[in-house]
Each structure stands twice: as C-alpha cells, then as structure tokens.
Amino acid sequence: MRKTIISAAIAAAAVATPLVATMSGPANAATSGFTATQTVTNRSDSGANGGTWAMDNYTRVITLHGQGVVANSFCPGITIGACHKISGNVKDSGHFTTQIGNPVPGTGSLNGGSAPNIGASVTGTMNGTYNYTFYTNQPLSNASAANAPATVDGDTPTTGSWYQQFFNGAEFWDASPGTGSWTYTAAPGSDSQCPNVSGRWVDASPDWGGQPVDGNILAPDSAHC
Image 1: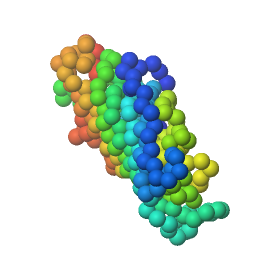
Image 2: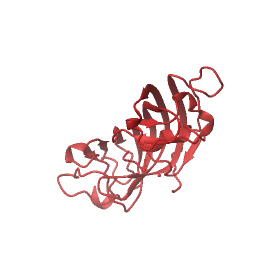
Image 3: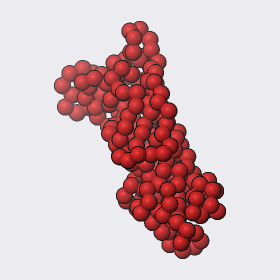
C-alpha cells in the first residue's frame, strides 16, 4: 500500500481488535520483539491510475525487531540518545469495497478491450504485507501498545510511518523505501450487475500494480459486462 494505506461509510467493517504487545519487564514494554494488532477502518485505497478506487477495512498486525545500536551517521542530526536500527513489517487481512465512478486500480483489460471506470459496488478480500527498516533514537523497549489506539479510522498514519505511533517523543530516520505486496480478489458473483465477472489485482513493489500482468478489479456495470 503505497497506501496513504484511507472517508466514507463501508458495508464491510472489520471487528475491533485490542492492541497486544510482546512484553518483558515493565508493562507494555517490548525488548527484542514487539507485536501489536489494530483494526483499520474507512481507509481510502489508491490505484495505479490515480484516485480512490476502493475503501478498505482490515486487521493490521505490526511486528518490530531490534537490530542493535549503529553509528550515529545512520541518524543524521540526532540530538539525544543512541541510534537504534529496527526492522519490521505490517500484515493486513480484510475487505475492500469499490467506489463507483472512479478509475479501476490496474491496467488489465476487460474482454480484450479498455477497462471502464468502476461501475458497481463490489466487496472483495484483501491481504498483504509491507516490510521496512528504520532508525530511531529510542530502543525498541520504549515501544508501547498503549501509545496507539485500538482502531485507526481514515488515512493517517501512512503505512510507511505506521511504527511511529508506538513510540513517544522519538526521532525517526528511514533506511530506504519499503517493499510490499497486497492482493485484492473479487470473486465470481461479487458484482451483482455482472455476476460472471471476477477480478484479481496485485499491488506490489516495484511497479505497484501498474502492469497488465498485475491484473485488475474491474467491477463493471451491466452496460460493460
């Protein structure tokens, strides 16, 4: 999810899930590993053609691992503390609902022709993961599930900065762009106007769903089946 991973009402809402953290020592403090689970609702999903092609509701699990203290050159301008390297990932599982009138997310065609704009409200499944490495002036033991809400509604924070909400008053430096992959599936029958049309779109680095081979979620209306 290049996603600025999103507001509108959605029919398929995820069930609220409490935050949980791997703890050792003081309550809510993580040492070598940290895991938290959140419910994400009403999150707009951008496609390769621009615009919001769907709204997402899903469960997100974030896992962080401390990689030790590194040279301060990895944390340029650090003002206090040591430079800690941390790796992690988020894993998503839930549902999307297409937004009528907006461009389809991918470049795959329908029956060999051009893909029409989304013409029907279709709900399907989505699953994905995003991996990254970052640097901070706080150890992973300072990460706390208590710093973040159990449910995140809307577009903030971005997927790339998701980990920041679990620290309090920390400075962050990104190592490099993250890598990720999300798969969206609209099963046969999910489009009430075109029940024989199904779709599958893979939104993955490095091209982020922009190639015909990545498929598409077409969601046509009855005039474009």
